[in-house]
Image (cartoon, rainbow, N blue to C red; front, side):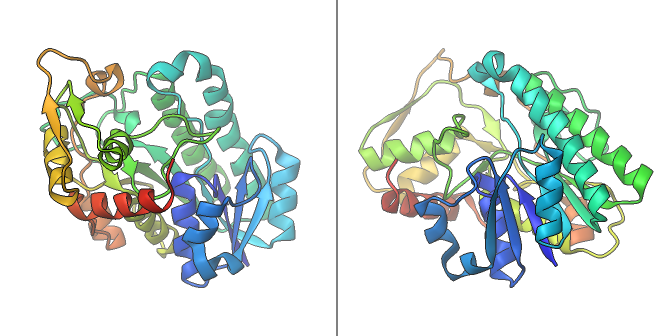
Length: 322
């Protein structure tokens, strides 16, 4: 028996794959590339012997069914998605709808036909839309996504939930918030980076950062987010269908930059009055995701504070320049 991870060579997916394979689970990493690059192989280390890579499209039902049959898949973690946010939204809107909605339905159908026992669907905090940044968001908060990404992720959730009900699939939905950390780097399938990527790269290059909008976000170290996913996958009968996966608190951008000055000697930044950092972050201010349910049901608590996360990410970026 093995676990299929769609988007398994991507940023979050490879961390999920690493934790599963590191625990001794056979894993099938399905992706458009169909292979691990050098950085991903290094990251997996000896655990890569338990990882089989499959080239495939989440819209291709036949390929999905064949992979599940060939590798005796009994569990699926569906993470493949198109992140159409900010300036990328207009050009990626249609593809996001196809992959995030149609791909989710296709993976669910393949899982149903294969008799998969456990299905975890990776969603996004963007489904909540803009909210009061001081008010934590519990899983039953209203969903009011604004952009095409959040809209498609909400639709994917509804399709997953209905498949669970119709076909008795033991499944759960995890809403991830703003991951950052090792293996976040630009590639043909990932062109939208977290602000932490830009700030860490500036620190390594000796550049000073100009902070225009001092906003907040519950930026989450990627291995913490992946651990929440793995705990949900490995849980027995989960009492809820939806779980948040976050660091649990909003971090002010200036506080993150101040932490970066403490872990990177010589790094400098300054605030620019009246500037504009990003319409996406400014227009999607929201509260931090409440982690009470994940703590109670999954035993999950985030383990990586911002200074530790920044230090680890800097170390990885030094070994893998981009």
